Image (tube, rainbow, N blue to C red; front, side, top):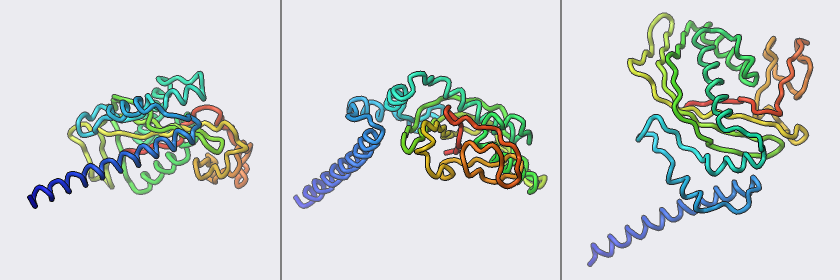
Length: 249
């Protein structure tokens, strides 16, 4: 009898814990939906989307996401939004970054202006420290919309993608990493769209725009010249989807 009571108490404790976890998760989803002006979120769509989340250990080619939840919101805000186009931009942006690092060639970085300075600095650091990084035979597999937020004049869209490549790192002439097999990995890539600059305060906390000549931070959107070196600045159109950051996870 005593063992039965202990077992029953343990079982009820597990059920209660799982219920609390679900309620917290649902609360945050509802809060995000209200924040984006969605109103009532369809619980059936939400549960179906959650059940379709891919476990990264089950299939390296898939990525988890909330595409079915977020895509209608995006299309509501941007009727001309093209899902495949944003996926192509994700792949193109990452290929530009990988190729620039591999070949130490920065010519195409102007296609991702919000990341141009940081990638240039990364390449310079590698050269100073005699480090060679190589990405080769890059192959993309899957894409999904991971997150979507809209506040303070800026929309942030996060895309997840799964891909594979051979990766090599040579440090001072010695091979430090050289994958015999392709590395299976995932990246989260953020795009921003500034729909109201008057509401977009402290933009440097969200993105970093630097002078391509001296590297100084540009303190005002739309500046025509650098305050430090006087170089002419190419205007960056932020009323479109701009690749702003990427992270491997």
